[in-house]
Length: 375
Image (cartoon, rainbow, N blue to C red):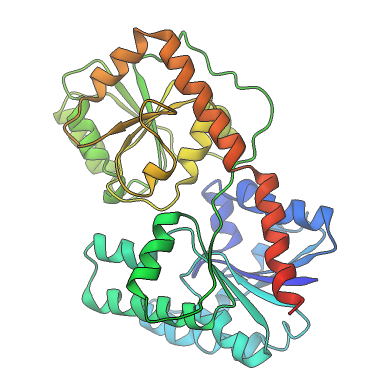
């Protein structure tokens, strides 16, 4: 069995390496290829450098297509991308199945599906259209994402979402599409070894992980903890780093920036902290939250529909119903009640182990391939 996996539009293996995602993202496909008669071809938006980055994986081939998109203009790169399926169809003639890593860029495998008469799985980690609406993108971009979602739903043989809320949202927004196979495939966490999370340190330090962009709501976290002795440690990079730093100084809040970390180092970092904060007003099915909980961190999260599928208030974490809810008060309550903290920490890890294991995702992934190829 040979699967062609299409990277997210304009993302390369080099990007995965630079952002620390490579060791995580490769695990699913590495273990599948090691344990089953399945080979992969990764279609990346990089150059020949991607060959070297992925050279250690015997049953993972690389087809970099970044050289086809050389232009400074987004619209030119997009128009060039429409020609790519015709350029690479011969190289993918022998594959059995097409799959996307995200919705963005799905037009390339959709065209290839029509050219090669192959089955297609479109996987989404978050609802691209819903995010565009909530981020108040331009009407043109929202229309484009609407049409991309529509055609993806019509063309995919399986359309995979990461949360129940995304499933319901799609069915409601595109209720005129009948008999469409939309299924939930949660994100996963590879849980190994014992948690070494200590209850005796970092009682006043909060960990946040994610892009330094407005969606993650860092400025409002800083406002919330202003006037307290809480420290905010942030792992990630983005365009708002300087703004976040300046705002923290204005609010007299200590913020430490750790940049990006390799996934293995990131998992070790989670285990150093008691508390993980996710303050986004909207999210998909955040891997960072799952990973933090898997390492025994107690999550403090701002309530939204997708997050409430993972965190249950006072069961495996703390839900803040509104931005004005005092983070400091929640932290002090837990610091003063060790048994309650240990209960939430243990429940957080147990829930992730039970519901979002890598082993379960491997099983479902192979089933998805087999269901379609055997048709």
